[in-house]
Amino acid sequence: MSMSESARPGAAGRERLVVIGGDAAGMSAASQARRLKGPGELDVVAFERGHFTSYSACGIPYWVGGDVDERDDLIARTPQEHRARGIDLRLRTEVTEIDLARQRVHARDVDSGAESWTSYDDLVIATGARPIRPDLPGADAEGVHGVQTLDDGQELLDSLARSRARGRHAVVVGAGYIGVEMAEALIKRGYLVTVVNRGSEPMSTLDPDMGRLVHRAMEGLGITMVNDAEVTELLADDDGRVRAVVTADAEHPADVVVLGIGVRPETALAEAAGLPLGAHGGLLTDLAMRVRGHGNVWAGGDCVEVLDLVSGQERHIPLGTHANKHGQIIGTNIGGGYATFPGVVGTAVSKVCDLEIARTGLREKDARRAGLRYEAVTVESTSRAGYYPGASPMTVKMLAERRTGRLLGVQIVGREGAAKRVDIAAVALTAGMTAEQMTTLDLGYAPPFSPVWDPVLVAARKAAAKVRGAQG
Image (cartoon, rainbow, N blue to C red):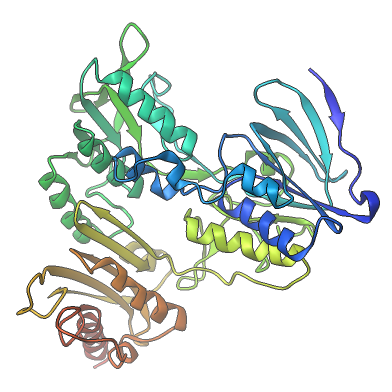
């Protein structure tokens, strides 16, 4: 095992940027800084412990399910492309320590074990998130998978290939976005799929009444839903491979298990260095994405907490859209420009087969937790004019603040054309609009695209009326 130390930053008049993490936030920051400062001004060194860079983690369920043919289709920019742009990218290299006092990081080559220190002028922490693995007997058995990186996706596909000789029972633990999407992917792979969910309905990012619509769609696909169930143990066979998932009431056979119970910020490295973490375990930054209290340390992506513009509270929302924006902002600031990230409204979309699922803003329990009083309405409408071919049902739920009528949140479940309607609400939330103001929005209309009153505006009318009634 060898130990070396890179030259001090500032060699030959250049500054050095060190990036930990080679996916969306990290490589966006590295690339943007490189655009603004050339090799004569800035050295850029990026460490990535996996095999891949700049890929779409959100696309992994579609690759596993066969909708995306090749793994490489999910890669936006290869390591070779980053290196060609003047970034010293070191794959299969894990940073094991951050030394803030001496402005350096310690790294270990995963394959050879070689170790080294690298000094920096600016440091970007983009370590992402890690799948939650329950602390249960058997959770480390072969055939139990979290799915967060391309390496994870490849391991799952390899595991599926091995499990076919044993059987085709799959259990997904958890029914959030990843759990629901992975359940559909496994159905497409020909597995008998059971989803074990400790909540009352799938998709806890929705209110339970909207999650019930997703439940019905999943059962329509042939997925067995087991709600209000806690996993107590995973059983393995004599070879150490998982064979069943156990709850208090049943034992579910499993040739493969996918953990879809969410992720946590990957901040152990940052915590060990003494950097500030929030209530959800994510790094805390200022508007420029600089770690609070540290002038030359930046952080972005799934390892940070962000401001919820609706509730005013910090949240952990791991999404590629945010990560790419964070990276652009960090790179701009390191490169000598100026940019900020004001916060989010919590917009997300997904699907189960042809059922589209969308939400933005607050759920009922989020509003209560934030101390907000609200009115909630639910409307049934259609995606197109009722007489136009292909019109399909759509359910829209809207929350508006009592007294002020300020929009607080929208959830939409429906068929084609439903999910992206949530963007109307996302803009309204960002602008601080009321339900009443939304009713006057000049949205595009033609029978192939919507009824004369768009479903979102129907919900806004009903919410505005309910707010007025509550004031009377």
